[in-house]
Image 1 (cartoon, rainbow, N blue to C red):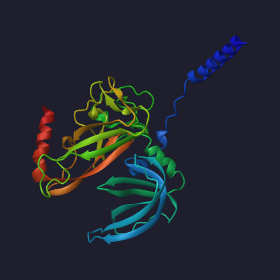
Image 2 (image 1 turned 90 degrees about the horizontal axis):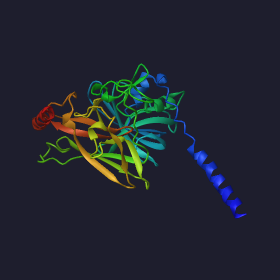
Image 3 (image 1 turned 90 degrees about the vertical axis):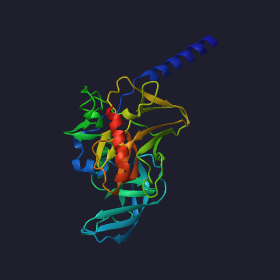
Image 4 (image 1 turned 135 degrees about the vertical axis):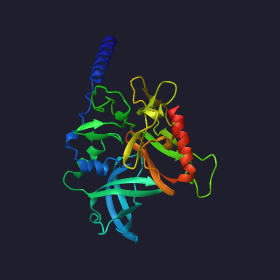
Length: 331
């Protein structure tokens, strides 16, 4: 009798093993051919994309410029976060400004909306909002279904590394120029960025530092996880091959990146583990740097996760520092 029980148990285990062993079909790739150009412009660069409601809109001061700068303060009640690390589960306040003659039209109160946001200088900034209608939710999802900084050309994905990487054959969902695969950060990852303190602090001169930033990636789960977008050569994390910096609506691979990820592997993080590294925004070659004293924004992107920082650039102080960073790169 006991032998029969053993045989039955073995048979059940074999059956379960067969079930587990069945290959899982990968998800169907998005139909990028359906994404409209206006949807990419409106939603693709969003740090946070969510479904929610504008429960209150309060008009603020109107500037005397021509056209005038119109400002608003609004309350948003989130329903579902579609992109981003932010834990938004209750109503919050966001600011919005637009330079135009006519007053902007906002969705009806309490109407469900698609909302794009960024978090800058401890405040939420509304980038785009549109009342849910037709296929705009699907368009927003498609426009954010690939990593930040990537784009579409004739329905094909193009990564920021297309400017530095070697041509490659794309397999699956990948860059059509280099073959670099789409590598997500993952839901369990929190990505944040902090400005490094300057060597010498100047009153009113460098409140945001001297261009160096600390990248922080944390596993917020109680399980060991793989972070596909964060790459390592087995010795150290290759931040320059993992991070993209968006500035003035243009994506840049980190200077020093080769775009070659064939020999790199994904970083494994233990439960609660945090890793960090530094990058210098002044290494970017291409942005229009402010003259005198003015602000410039950097959006640091790890696949679908990002953090935006506003930086006060004082040209007489920061130009020499930027020149030194650029010269160091050329050596």
